[in-house]
Structure formats: structure tokens, C-alpha cells
Length: 246
Ligand SMILES: [Zn+2]
Image 1 (tube, rainbow, N blue to C red):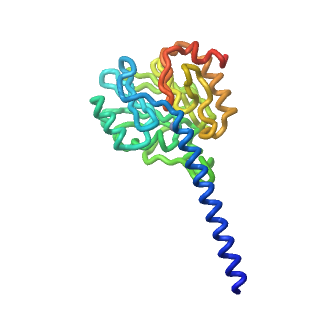
Image 2: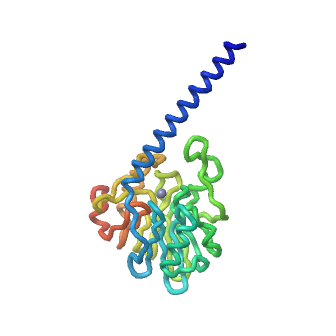
Image 3: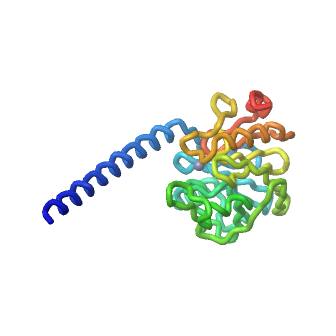
């Protein structure tokens, strides 16, 4: 009995050591990957388009008179609320939230927009219902009801037209939004480095090869005046940014 007990204790200790090493490696990698992110400060980006910075992530607000929609919902509800107030926007006036995907740093402030409809892509639902895990056994989750938007579908909120462009890769249901035909919100589908489009961090991507296909597809969108990413700022030179993807 003593022998068996000893083996159990050693086995258990070995498991603890493996777990601690893995957790340490994960924390180290996460930290290194977060360091290359380049969100922009809370401010107006161009007339009617505003960025809110929440730590390493941006969400965006599009406003046209009485109509106001938000792209993504940040990492921390308090910080998002503070950002909205500093821009003099009442979160209760937001009519719709369009999620580029459902990772935790894009959905935290959904409850803040209490009068808004929430949209995810038809392909992203698998991240919420347990069909596809984000990481090991872990699933994404959001704490509000939602509607679904499909590839090429346009949802119109007053004077604001939001067209979905399905861009799987980062998550299987990642989607970009082309707003009023000129503002392209790309979420985590790509990164911008020295004004050039590159893949998003492989470490955070579920399928980088599929993401590359999505980026090549995006390179053929016409009329884009501004690319707005969730972690890498914005670019007003669409041609240059996508030139190596055509
Ligand atoms: Zn993100």
C-alpha cells in the first residue's frame, strides 16, 4: 500500500510540474504576442468614425445623426464605458453591435449597449454552442442574445449600411464589415505593419492558411477609404496595404 501511495503522489507531483511549466510557457508567449499589438488611442478617426481604446484592443463607433452602431465590444466593460463617455456618446443610444468574432477581447461590453441588436456571422455560432472549441475544451461565450449575418448580406441601421464579408481563419466565423461602402473593419483577420497587411498573429489564429485566403479575397474589395483593425490601428492607403496580396 505504501508503494502504491508513493507512486500516486509522484504521479500527481509530475502532473503539477507539467501543468505549471505549460501555464508559464503560455503566459510568456501571450505576453510576447501582446507586445507587438498597436491599438490607437480613443479619438475621432474621421468624420463620423471613432476609435475607443481598451487596453490592447480597439472597438469602433460609427455615428450618423441619430444613428449609432459599434464594431466589436472590447475586453473590459468599465474601460469601454469610460471611453464612450469621454467621446460624449451614450452607450444606450447604440442601435447595433457588429462583432467581427467572439473572442473575449471583443465581446466584454455587450451589456453596456442595452438597446442594441448584436450581430455575429452565421459561421461564428459554432464558437458559442460548443461545436468548435476555441482552445482545448474552452468555448467562447457572449452574455446577450444575437442575430446572424451572412457573407455579402447588408444590414441597414438608419443611414448606416453594414455589409458582411466572411473572412474565416482567425476563428472559423470571423467576418469583416464594410460600412457605407468605404470603411473596412477587419477585426483580427489581419495585422498592419508599416502600413502593409500581414496575417494576424499565428499564435492567436485558429487557421492561418484559411486566413490568408480570406485576406486575398479582401484585397479585391473596391472603394475602401479606410482599413480599421482591432489591434493594429488604421490605414488610409488600401492599394498599398494590400499590394502583395493580389
Ligand atoms: Zn482580438
